[in-house]
Image (cartoon, rainbow, N blue to C red):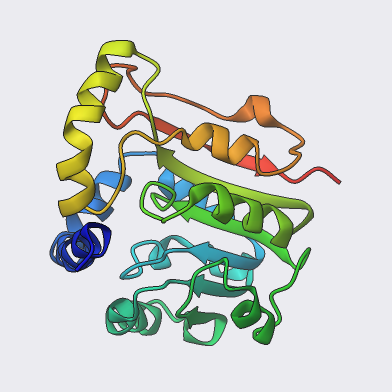
Length: 222
């Protein structure tokens, strides 16, 4: 087995186990952050990137939601996500699509085409996808002019010593946790297309953190 394939065969189940056994811890931590208010800002026709086991389901403001498409490449989260949809009465407003956002043919079959979405929600996803640049370019294309990209992510630190620590920790972290510490996620977001309000992006955390946050609501330029 090639080295990359061997690592992927390890990291996929490890990531699944991690997110399956710890969802309540993630939810509790996110409750102390801006995440709940970000999710509640999503309205209209929404695409949720990487919903996993459905940690954000209970946070949507249902009266503002026309429909949500959850785009998740891992089919093993289906049962957990469906249980949360039933619990929070969103079954009729949510469809899980087992694919990546780059799979345009699959999305097109569901009516998701360029300029068709009011909002894209992205909570701790870009650190884990294979190619965040491609993902963000697709996101920008799918949003309507004036559509919102709502995100809470982490990326590479601005502090030199912390970037060294990230580089040291990243091989094990990415293999066993399933996400990358060293990506320039901010650049991937900003370079995906034209935004009305790039100055509204917030970087609220200590620059010495190995998981420095970036967050905000970007509006696609008309």
